[in-house]
Amino acid sequence: TAGLGGTGIPEVALEAYEDGADLTAIEDPGCGVPWSVLAAIGRVESDHGRFGGAMLRADGYGTKPIRGVALDGRPGIALVRDTDRGGLDGDTLYDRAVGPMQFIPSTWGDVGVDGNGDERRDPNNIFDAAWGAGVYLCAGDADLTEPGELARAVRRYNDTDEYVRVVLGLAEAYEAGDFEAAPGTDPDTLGETGMDPGVYRDFEDVDPAPGGGVDDNGLFDPAPAPAGPAPAPAPPPPP
Image (cartoon, rainbow, N blue to C red; front, side, top):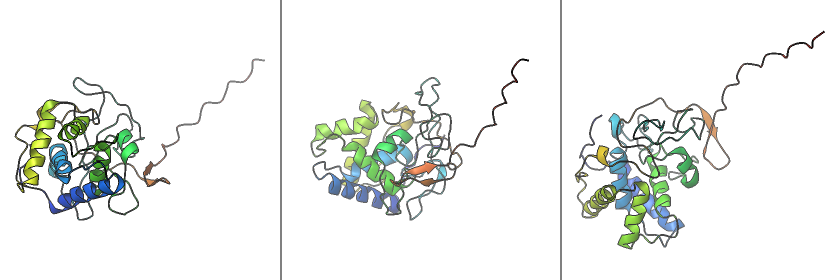
């Protein structure tokens, strides 16, 4: 797969990260998640929504979906069977990480938010996903102004020292105005993450998820699975 480029932060992505931090602060004023940490995670997870040649549109959606590998239990990959009938990840057999911040569907069900006011909570939209990442990092009354708690929160995304080092290093560079900063390591080597059990390699572009509406909470309500064939009639009773 192509490596992540070091070409800065797209304006749409930067707006999404700043909005995500601001909206998280309104909902959880004691947390203090920095926009720069959201940006650093977005950089490592998807190159700010540009992985695989995708480009962000002004509304926060990409020109094509970003999906992780099928979490099918192959060597090095966790086994996570489908939890959303393919409604978010387009896969009705196994879950896949979704969108620029790489949420798996079950996690998005817990933290999904509408960050751009379109009455949909969609991890494929960077405004929704960035705010959702803030919600995820701030879980449990965290105070991310404390360096130790910030590091622990980032570790929830990926439980490795190297991932925490890379994210916090990028965040520091972004805070200093260095938007051209690169991770300094190949994200393919960063291993698995507790939220997204897939490793950071072999990302695949797949067709958009099957059609469906949204439920009463604004989350996607996938289209119902097609009905199977009618069961065969019971045999007649013996004479």
